[in-house]
Length: 105
Image (cartoon, rainbow, N blue to C red; front, side):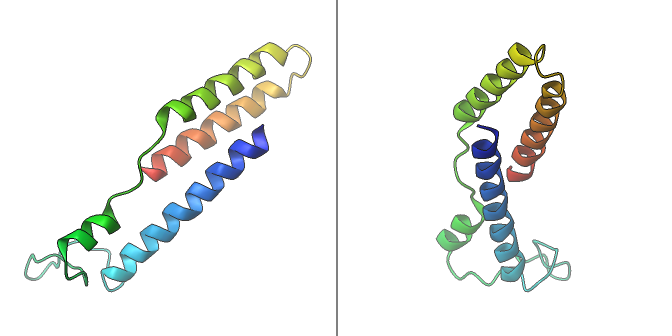
């Protein structure tokens, strides 16, 4: 279960990183979204539809992510008497989930 959830987080993180690199390339490798000299948008896109498609991310499935998180925390709490290390694994999982979702926004 942990491997399945971690692999989906890693895949989403790689996808978001690729999209951010494409945005950086679109701005001619500049960190500025607007040109600092003339305040015009710093993009190579010719149509507004293409620009919006590049900067609009996918819909987040918060209900599924919350269900995975709650089920994993429940399993950790239910089995922590038998496996004391499971509390630490649950903490690491919660931290990774938090930072992955924060990065994807």
